[in-house]
Length: 189
Image (tube, rainbow, N blue to C red; front, side):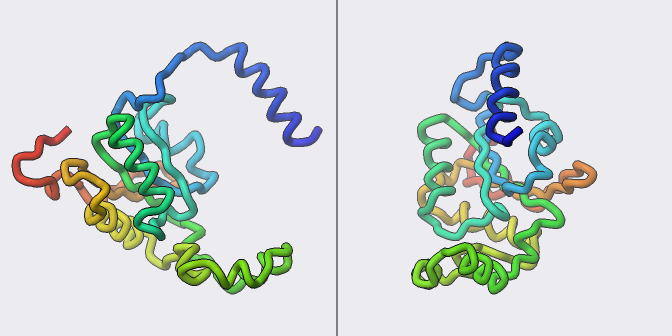
């Protein structure tokens, strides 16, 4: 059976069994910015004690921040200012594929798939910078936390935490506790 048909069949059964209504406003007022790695699906949220409706989830390859005004920051701004989120958790993970990304091999695969070379060359900044690859997953999390703290669109009262997740064991490690960076007099949520 084709995958689309499997998904639709599953969905029909799932809809009949569903019983928890939630609102679009995250109950725990937290934003999780993490990687799109498949090993995190149905594993990261329970490891954090989160259920459907508790948090805003933003995912991209390697939980990288390439453009300070791009889609990730746009989503963070909406979650904070329109949905009332009060904290950001940047969560990287061990054994991240973006740490081993071979941009030249990816470029070749893109060309072989019919992506025009002009389109690749037009990426700004360069393909490698646009992809946001890195060699140190812990350093990437710390870098993203700092970029978000420095972004004028993110209020200084919003703590930005940095964590590392192990997709094998589920262990969570704090790299950056965002509370000490709050301005004097700002209450911790």
